[in-house]
Structures are given as structure tokens and as C-alpha cells.
Length: 509
Image (cartoon, rainbow, N blue to C red; front, side):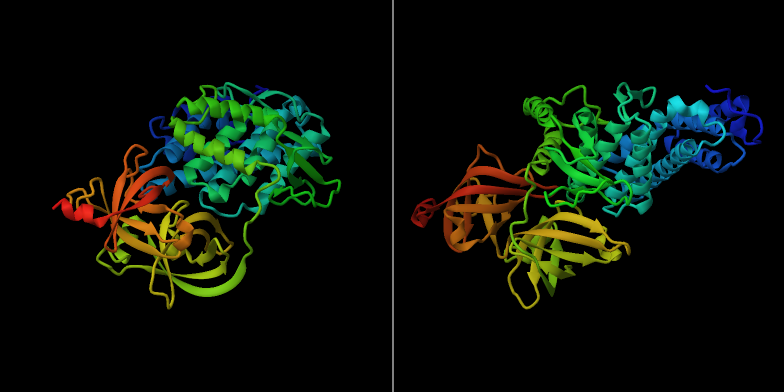
């Protein structure tokens, strides 16, 4: 400690004895309340102008390090739990976002004062790498909270990130190894923190589910020693970031105008490490050295590592078809059960919503939903779609989300098929068998080529089990080929489709 904490301020954290008493009285068994209280203390220390700079930092450091145990507990609960109510999720999200906001602003202000040579800054000269890295780490938490809501990041965040990086570059401590927190168990650096947050942000945050965003952030941080950042364009550059006019990072496409304020971030030798992680995950094992902030199945983690491998491919994936502006209303049924009700095998209940399409392509469309309609929309949501003045229903899956400044939700949907047909599936080929279940056949005409793409109840697909499909008086044997996608309330599967002689069915009676 640097001469705990100074006596000029009458702030309770300015006196070591009263500071320790405050920390001892925190409600240790209530992580949410404790983090909220510590956040309030951090804010008050940040705003108290009577603290000398080095004393202010020590007070912030003590509060921040005390808070991390409770922050990790709440983050684990927020990202690892699948049973949170909307109310619980909001409480956790708000507490974490407030904490990251105060910590990032506090460390950012200390770093700015160090650059300005304020009184007490000389005592912090050797600690500037830690201050800058912690500022960026807290900014990553704020960005993560924004991404959880598919919201735009506040412009202030990119400014703070640019300032922290610029200080490290100017003072030549980008690669200075630091122990970020006493219990972190691993060294970091400003370069690690800076490149990790930028790479995570451009790696499809708007296309991932909330838990996947969390896992992507952890996996990317784990591999940070591979990443490069340079003032010159170099082989393997993946993104650019402007440190003079800071805005969200941009994926490098080869035609960027190079100027001195741009920094070029690349993957370095990360591919070999990512391949090794995937080989371990192939065995059903999560590598022990990756701190995921919770316990996750290997299959869940590998969905994320494969996503990273895809979005980091060089050159970047290109849009397959052009978009065009359009204005058309869609009837939308959210979820497998609602879709079945809208087809000819169900009861055709009402209860659909109306979405207005603003852009369309051959493979999908984009809608903008007001906040009142957005609550139930998630990445991976299966939706039934029926344009106005069209009788038949189609199907799509929500692939991209993003909010604008007015909190409207921009929804990108991949179209699976423009026509659905309700079918009955059974394990035997005997009509009327007790194991009949309803499914949705994605009718694609000549494109089917002897295959059937089906939307079914979850856990219906098995690679070892054939099914029989009865539709429009015809009988088909379905031989399993692949589970294309597994959603929360559906299996999307591909089968080889073989038409059978219906006389064999008649002989079974």
C-alpha cells in the first residue's frame, strides 16, 4: 500500500481503520447487495476531489479487489443459469453493469490524471500498466452487458478504451506482465486486454446467444497472448480500431484507408491453439486451463469455438445474396408449438403477431420491432412466417439481433422455407400407431432431391433411428442423415426420403 490513504479527505475510505470496518460490515452472504454497496463506495471515492491521486487509487484498488469475489458470483449466476426469471436477470444485469461502469470510469480518471502529472502521479508510475489493464477489463464488462441486451455500446466506452491503450503505447508498457487480480491465477497485459475485447466485439456478438457471448469472451481472453496489434497493416490483420476518433472496431476487408491513428489487430498464431482446444473438446473434455467462469458441457463450449473458427476465417464470409428495401407485413408465430397450430395438422389457433419487413434477400429478411414486441425474441428462435395476402406458412430462424438508439430491436431472420406442410411421424409404418407425433416438413419442391428437412419436437432426432412419414396419402421411409440444428424447443433434421408402396401399409391391417 502507498501510505494508506491520506488524511485530508473526510471520506470514510480515507482512514484505514474506518475503511476496514466498512468492509467488515458488508453482508457477505448477499452477493447482490454487497456488490451494490461496493459500487456506491467506488462512485463516492471517484467523485471526492479531496483525495490525493495515489491515495484515491489505493482506495479504489481495495474496493475493487474486495468486490471481485461478489462480481464473479453474480456473473456466474447470470451467464450459467438457464432458469433465471426476467426479474432476476434484470437485477443481476443492473448490478453488474453499474459496477463495471463505476470501475471503468474510476480507473480511467486515475489514468488521465497520471498523464496530466497531477499530484501523487509519480507514486503510481510503476502501477500504470495495472491501472490501464484494469480499466480495459472493466470496459469489457460494460461491453458485455451491452451485448447481452444486443444494444449499441455508449461512445464513451470506445473513448476510454482508446485512452487506456494510447497511454500504454506512449509509455511503452503494452506488454508489461501484470497480475490483473490477486485471485486471477494468470498474468495479463494491456495488449492482452485490449486485443481481447476488440476481437470479441467483432466476433459475432449480435449473432450469438447470451451464454455463447459469455463463453466466447472467456475463450478469446484465454488465447490473448497470440494476438497482435500494430500501427502498420500486417499479414493476418482481422480488424482496425481508430485511437484518435474511437468508434466500434471494424472488420478489415482489404480496402481500408490506412492512416496514423489506425491500429491493426491480428490473430497471430491463434489457429494452432484453437485447433488444440477443439481436439480436446472432440473427446468430450473441456480443457482445465480455460477459466469459463462456471461449469459447461464440452458440446456447448465447442459450438462457440467452431463459431470463432468460422468468423475468423480469411477472407471474411461474404453475403451470399443482395438485400433490397421492402415494406410488407408478416404474420409471425414464435416457437415450434405455435407453428404447428398454424399448419393443417393443428388446431389453427389465433395468437400470432404482425412484424413489418424492411429489408429482404433470397435467404432472409430484417424487421424492426418496438420494445413492446421484443421481449420474447431471441437468437435461435424458430418462427412461422406468413406474408400478407399469402395463405401458406413458411419457417425461419432468428440469426441476428441489435438495438438502435430508441431501443427498437432489429431482427435478422434466415428463411428456411416458404412453405410448410404438417406431417405425422411414427416409428413403425402402421397407420394409426400410438407413437404418432406431429412435425413440420419444409417443402422445397425440386430442391428436395430425395431428402426431407423436418422441424420436430426436441430430442426426436436420433442418428440410429429411422422414421416413417405419412403425408397427403403417401408413405415415406425417413433415414437419418444429420441433426442440422438443435433449438430450445425443436430439432431441425435432415433425412433421406424414400417413398413406399402404400399397399404394404394396407396389408398391415
